Length: 201
Image (cartoon, rainbow, N blue to C red; front, side, top):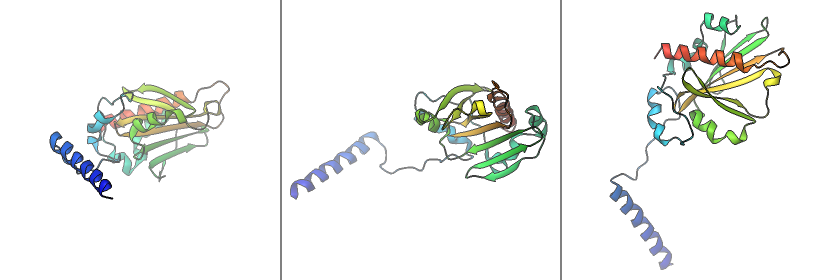
C-alpha cells in the first residue's frame, strides 16, 4: 500500500517539475471546434505535416447563417443551375439546389464539425476515393466514402476555407452520360464558392 502511494507521489512531482521547467501551466485551453472564426488558421502548426495549409483563412460566418448565399444566380447559371436553393441544417449549414429541368442537383455544406482537411487526411484510408487537388489556390480533395460514385454522376469535393474548417461541394447528375465525369461541374462550382468567399474577405 505504501509503495503504491510513493509511486503516485513521485509521478505527480515529476509532472509538476516538468511543467515548471517548461515555464507553462498545467491548465488546458479550449480549442475551436470549427465555425466562423477567421483565426482558426492560427493553429496550423499543430496540423499533421502531410496536410496542406491554406494561403489565407477565409471568414465563413456570413455563409453559415445562410449557406445559399455562397453562390449567386449568375454563378449558378455557370454550372447549369437555374433554381433557388433551400437552406438546411444537417447538422452543418447546407444549401441544396435541385434543378429538375436540368436534371442536376448541387449542395454546398459548411463543414464546421470535421476539423478541416486535417480530419479528412486522418481518415483517408477509410475512403473509397481520396484525391487531393487545388482549387483557386486552396487545398481540396475529391472524397467518396463507400464507393466510387462518379460513374453514377456523383462527385463530392471538399476544400479548406481555413486550416480547421472545410466546405463540401457535391454535384449529382440525374442522367449521367457514359464516361462523363461529374467532378468537372463540381470543381467549377467549388471554384465559384471560393470566389464568393474571397470577395467578402
